[in-house]
Image (cartoon, protein in one colour):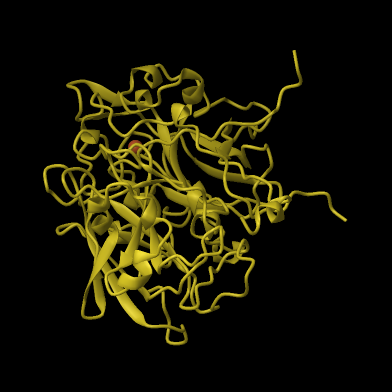
Length: 246
Length: 205
Ligand SMILES: [Fe+3]
């Protein structure tokens, strides 16, 4: 008999003190897009505890190689080659296998392949800027890419985004759904960024800053950055039957 | 001192930004050749799916009344029998021709999202009472710092809605209509208002 906790309980209460509030006027777009009324608290019903699953068979072999997945045969994206790797865990420090992780980013010059991005930096014809992975049995994922460049954006008159990679993560429950961004150790723009500063807690921000990981670096090939992602934890249902009938 | 509990903290959310469609629906923004098709986009149903075919349509509208053109909406729902296609569904096996999950980018010009799906069956609340049929929605966009969760109920389910234990929790009854999709033929219109008099009820779930 395995002594694991059954996995169908409601999620831990979200710690909103570690999450950005909706209304953050220094990030101007939030002003007209922030709900103003209190959220309705709802302890997870089946509708929030359940969630979709995605099979490894949906992946193509280049889905986690942004250096090559949009490049012409024999060519590759321009920029500093990096490996990004880490684990998806829950708040109980358990690895989450079978989690779909999607990522997107600007190219090495800080330009997105998007018709609304008009930044001066050049488009790289060999870089699409999107990829995905599904965590293995140990909750582990990895992908190869080029380090994105920082870029200016219209907010304040001189606001710059630090280099970052956008992440979208599915847990096992729809209520674990999360979108976030990964930053790079040592980037001085992190602490000047109005979007980073929507997060009210310094330690929480630091959990989005990936350290250089020399042990995972591929010598003469690419540097590595380690980025662990934590999704909401789940309460045990072991004693659920005590509540029946009340 | 006592032993540390050793829990981790959930990673903080950051806005999906203006280019969320590159990551989640690349073909929609003209990035072809990486994925054969965009995940979750298009009909949730095939010809074998059981249940009544419906369309859910709406827009995400900001505090000035302008529809967002850079939003992305996902839905999650039970099948026609009220079962979720999830390993955490313990009551039975859901329709294998219905994943229950869909993703829609807002239309570039109109901001409209669209889902072709089936009407979900009823799902029990924790105490065993049945909830009214509903679809869970999750909204992200530039300017939204943490994804917004809400539900759409159905205008032609007035009796079920009246006894729904979640709708019953809404203190200001005048806000309940913000969670009701309005039937028009085989389609339901469900606009999501981020602010203002008709601000949608969002959930902390
Ligand atoms: Fe970005």
